[in-house]
Amino acid sequence: MLNHIVIMGRLTRDPELRRTQSGTPVVSFSLAVDRDFASREGGERQTDFIDVVAWRGTAEFVSKYFGKGRMAVVSGRLQIRDWTDRDGNKRRTAEVVADNVYFGDSKRDGDSQQQSGGYNRSYSDAPSGGSYGGQNNYGSGGSYGGQGGYSAPSSSDFAELSDDDGDLPF
Image 1 (spheres, rainbow, N blue to C red):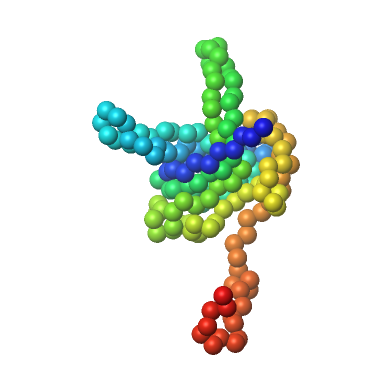
Image 2: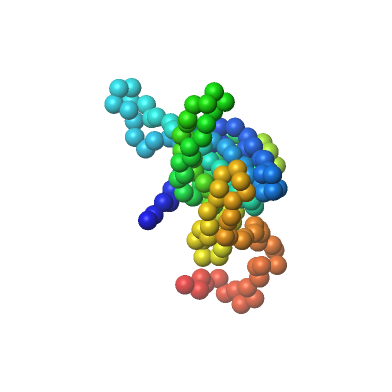
């Protein structure tokens, strides 16, 4: 079975970071995602508002670097949750559980928050290899099989070429 979704849109509100009773960080936010086609009646593009939830390190990354209006690319899985509202009515909600979150715009295109990054910055809780290692039980702390960490490249990760004759090596 395959359940994988990738969406790109702008945050409709600031991410809301919370912690479960066991202290696990979880963030929820919503993305405004434009459809690729225009409606027949008015010729205008429709927008979908999609709820997203991220856990652990991904949640902390999103709450730190993203804000309302910032473009984000989310890769994850679609999850349908059944719940009961305050009046006792049964409800059903569809949301994306984020495995990876990427910046969809550059720093100068985003909002006025202090942010680092560009198109290639992301955070993932998935183990190396990019696969999802477990399941989350929303609101209960769940189990998650992935470990990960966000680390931006430092200047020591790059070296100056000593034999630079101006020709490209490819």
